[in-house]
Image 1 (cartoon, rainbow, N blue to C red):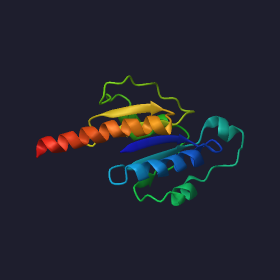
Image 2: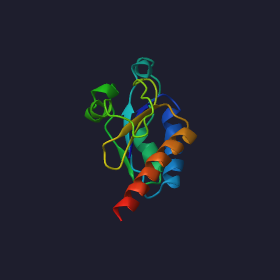
Image 3: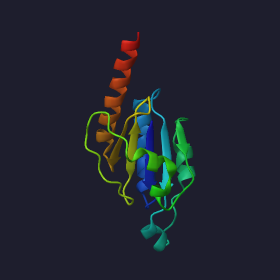
Length: 144
């Protein structure tokens, strides 16, 4: 599962929804995505044209996409508060939560491990998801 705190800067949401569409094609049966749209204070102050995330979500062909209610502070979200102190599965160092950047939380299948990435590239994200996917496959083989 991926949980994404997505700031709604012009163009950013559309770019990320397009990238998520691609990633969900790479991992069609294993990946669920939860998106928390964040209205950054800087963008709200500028009165920029608001990005309509529900419309972008409709364009996303995957049915494994959950869209949460918009917020102006991701740190007030209960899921974010819960995930921040959890440890990464592969031992990679966690980075600080940056509210003006895309924050991606990759959650292991058993929910015990969470890795937080700040504004990762598509390739970085695919590599990290693959680490968790391989770990899940190894775990399933041991159970057999």
